[in-house]
Length: 100
Figure 1 (cartoon, rainbow, N blue to C red):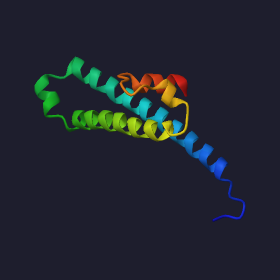
Figure 2 (cartoon, one colour; figure 1 turned 90 degrees about the vertical axis):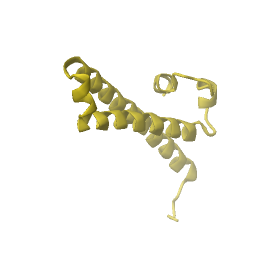
Figure 3 (cartoon, helix red, strand yellow; figure 1 turned 90 degrees about the horizontal axis):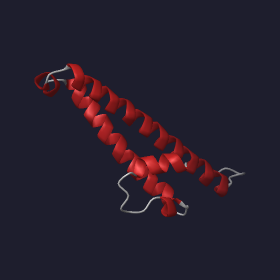
């Protein structure tokens, strides 16, 4: 352990990194969702079902959602996010981003 290790500072920095990751994941998910919407405007259903890129976009969107949920749960430990994000919240991403 470092000589000048400050646990409180490290914890604050860790939580800031989690908030940054939540924001980045939300942004990435938004881009993937927009790209899928655009693909739906010009691609046929058959082309979409055969598109590796579209499947990657779907996977990215899902992974971002799952990552945000895990990061938010970690961030909620010992913070006021328990007040902001009820367990039955359907709109967890929007509320988390607004309050962070």
